[in-house]
Image (tube, rainbow, N blue to C red; front, top):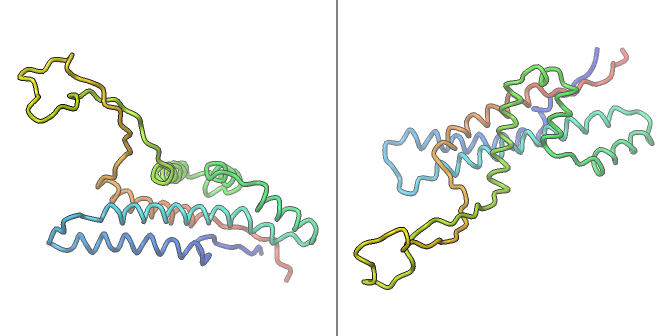
Length: 199
């Protein structure tokens, strides 16, 4: 019989999922109130829940890749692979997902889940690594009050260079619940199988 380790049961993973769940709880509690509070922060809680769901998956991936090293009995070989995996083979999250897909049949067979996990990390990256878009909308030139012409033609318009960052939306609230479920589903399928135990 082989020993196994469920990645979702790791304390580090459970802690990050608990943070995500707590923020989803804030959203649910605020929905149950009939009063509308100005400056609604539900989208902020949604962002936090999504980011921590992604963080839980990333730690889960790292554990999945690292735990097999602990099963190597030879000290020198174990240290060699430990340094290789933890220091020199720093893969991006998409590369880790592809690697796990190759060695975890439960993940490989669930194409819909893989798509959801990739979407979760695309969202995370759009929040954490956002960069502005450069635009040049047409508008009126800077005029003093009262200098506005009575008729405006296209020739009167000038380009106004701007940097625009993507904003948040209420869709992020519902996405946060889906992101959390995606993290739970993915982590539930990540199990490191150990070596045969000798009875």
